[in-house]
Length: 364
Ligand SMILES: *Cc1c(COP(=O)(O)O)cnc(C)c1O
Image 1 (spheres, rainbow, N blue to C red):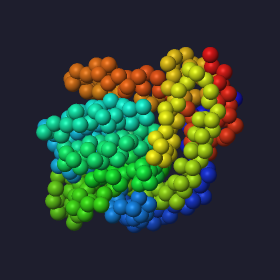
Image 2: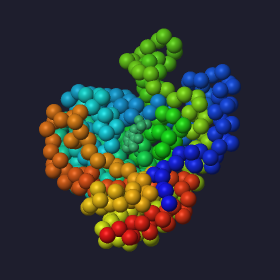
Image 3: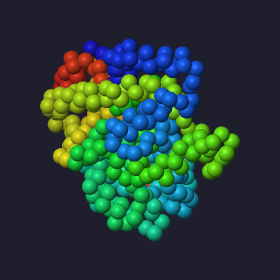
């Protein structure tokens, strides 16, 4: 049997009629940027999260860059980020010429909260947790630390749409939540798209200016802005996705439970689930010591996998001037060396999950 890592076409086919109606509606409207579809999506996504404002932008990376800029974070400032973050989370900091300060990962592959306060200095301006793979961080303690030290809390929610910590939706804990709607994400567009969410009226206004050349009224440029606007086609497509977000999250959860119940191989470790949180399984990570051998074995048996992420940001070539070593963050290093992502997506046939489980259990 051949098992693809992810088949976007299958997810698309489930809601094909609705997607096509949405896209055609925009194509025929004659209005493609900064229009009613974007406004409608912003309102719907804000309602979904229970926040006052949603600002739709061009990508998750832009959302991260803009969040720091709108909060006034600049050169000389420090932002605390996970050592095992995705590179885009760190780009959000470095694009503003601020310095990322890394903390190692915990057993849930989130931020090790016990390290955060040790890294706070007079230059620290914000904490930026990344809810990796769809599982929330220890938001109770992180929120408390941010409050105690007067730091902004910025959430990277690119992988966790609809997940909750103690019943509260991720993205709503801090000053601002940053979302990506890259096609494979739990809520995905059919192109690049992203959004910021906040309850702060002043910050929201600033972000709206920032995304549109710094202007609200054409040619009246109030601040130094950029061009980062969600186009009308993506906004219409995302309204369809948002209507069905819970179905997708539930489906991946069901597939994940199948993996969890089915995989019994001493060489394979499944990271634990946080008790007081819901996981949306954007990805299904497992940890294997002989990764190379394991992945070759799976590939030989027709099963495709991916690695998230083989090179952590603190040792990325683009940041080599900081002089970090792999061993500076031992857990992040261990995850980078052992993580394997199994196929999981809405529309994945159950028999393929069963096959993957069987193949894994026969690995020696
Ligand atoms: C995908 C992703 C981003 C970047 O989003 P884009 O829309 O691709 O720019 C940022 N952070 C994390 C954790 C991501 O997974």
